[in-house]
Amino acid sequence: MPDPVRALGAGAREAPGGGSRPDPAVSPRAPAAAGGLAGRLRWLRRQPATNIVALVVVVQIACIVLGLIFPIDFRYVSETNVALVLKAIPVLGVTALGVGVLMISGEFDLSVGSVFALVPMLMVVLIGRAGFDPWSAMAISLAVAGGIGLFNGWVTLAFSIPSFVTTLGMLFIARSFTLVLSGGFPPPFPPGMPVDVFVVSLGLIRASLLWYLGVALVLFFFLQRSNFGNWIFATGGSGQAASDMGINTRRVKMICFMLCSVLAGFAGIIQTLRLKASLPSLGLGLELEAIAAAVIGGCLLTGGVGSVVGAIIGALLIRSIDNGLIMARVDADYFKASIGALTIIAVILNTYIRRRASNIRG
Image (tube, rainbow, N blue to C red; front, side, top):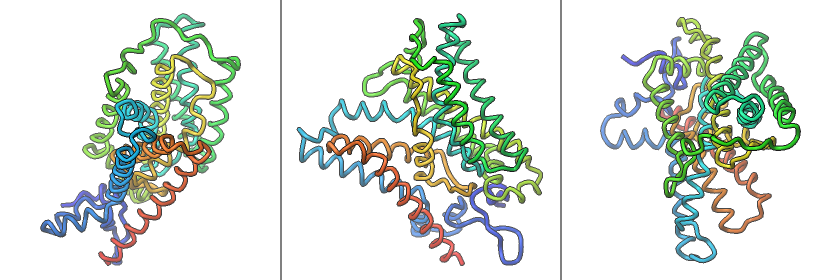
């Protein structure tokens, strides 16, 4: 028997005779229903993540070929450059994971860039001015991030206003508090910080990449193998139907808001430990990159569809293209244009795939 909650969460749509049936573009039951290798391949082609994986492969192949043709001017395949890409991914990736989970539940958070700056700033201030030890300061700062997410969720749900508006306001509030805490200047970086635990260099990678993969693995099993993961998909796919089935959709969304803010704060701590400086300007524009990574990875703006793997691929693609443009010595002003174009293309591809799959099913 298909799981009705998962069907709702995976993009269920109303059947002609009432009830709901899963969207074939995202239904995990499609391969079995199709039968045979040919059916599985057809199902795979209809998955949004397949398009993004293919795009990542094309980008990587193109960059590698250019690196082989122009080994002096385009050192994409050099050990130094590969290390730079791998060390740059975790910050965006961790933030994108939180944003992606929240988008699956049907909400947005535009304040993650400001929370990204506020949490490490608060941690440094607690250590340097209040005498807290690093671990206590980190725990308190992440708890504050959770409180910000809780506030975002409460305001959004209690007053029935769009999360876009709530978190846009929090974007300015959190950024303002960051500036107030810093006094306008980066505070001294305290001694004894757990740099080795989070960002120590391990050859081509940093420890932050392992933390990123660990968070991704936990979220993957959380979304795909737990009842609460089913509730998140159901809440974003059809909130009213989920409520009718007994799911507390308000609680689900509140937890997703909190998770999103905590992960943004954790990513900010990683960045601060890597730079060994807490800057008031950290995270400017990060919220848009994180949303772009989630959307590129297949998250629907309307909720109910998305995956951890997709968010990972979206972050990888953004950082790979950024790096390729740097290698090609393209003007930095075009970097944001590439992310914007990539986001539009990804949404068009995903929409086309879902419509085509729906037409085939119909």
